[in-house]
Image (cartoon, rainbow, N blue to C red; front, side):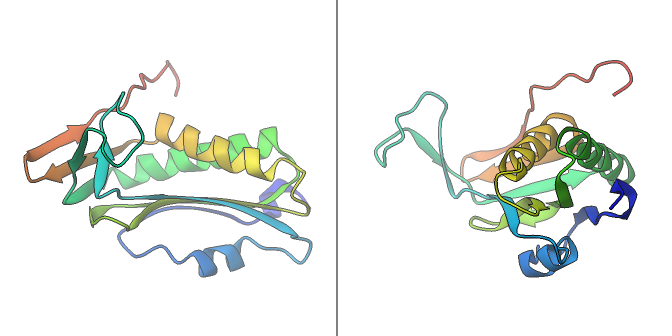
Length: 163
């Protein structure tokens, strides 16, 4: 099957992410594996450099507020999907979905899913690449609100010419 005929979903939404619906949309009769990454809102965030224990230096998050310029963000999500297809031609279906709006702890914020005929065809690596690349190039802004105030979470990516 040609890449143009393979199922690809990329969207920004205010609606709840429905994993079962998305998986059904990117699954073919030949699909035998799906690798899925879902990011969630943390209610408690350990500060950088803190020990990963319950006694570490942490701050509370009441909610996150996500914003995006949807046409630009979806174009970049399509770019991520195209890059996955170029690197892992065995990937059958791809879903890249980001929620916007006010999201509370334990709520899924992003979903990257890749399907393939078998698990050993790069499907795990493709999903990992998808979330890393989304965080790198898709223009989504995140404001964190805590009992101590609010602040915009800064990314560390600087676009190169033509990106």
